Image 1 (cartoon, rainbow, N blue to C red):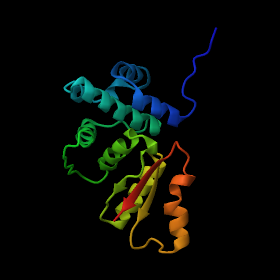
Image 2 (cartoon, one colour):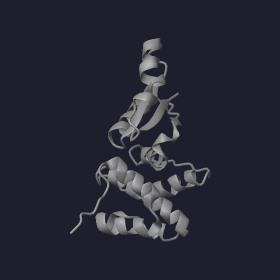
Image 3 (cartoon, rainbow, N blue to C red):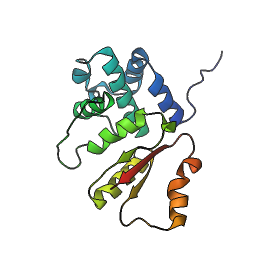
Image 4 (spheres, one colour):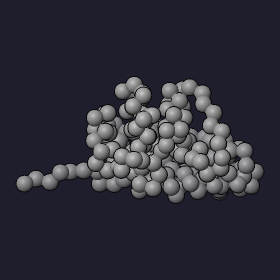
Length: 177
């Protein structure tokens, strides 16, 4: 009797999700996720292509956070708009999940595709988002602002060489203004 070879790391699992089709994604949802956490009423209104992207968003967030975060309809709707290169504005209270919307788009991208620059107007928000991206979503992140060191050593070690130092499984993101 043979063994089934599955992903060896969370990063391999995420790559698998990024490339899975709708049926496979739906199977993952049914096997691993409590159905009450999935915004099915929203997802069911979408085209098959949009459903595929939303299920990818959902599973990427769910698995990278160890099941602690499950994107809601509002978050999927905003992330899908970004994916489809449409404008969206999310105006909601602090702590309602706006950072996850940004993370979903980054998580869906191929990790080797480069850097993402996110502009945050407040230093405290920059630090909070950088911590969330690193700790919650495993997205390699640094906040850059007027407090950032201007020494050549810092820029050589933290910025210019970050792509050479990061393992292929890590994402890159720069947060700041």
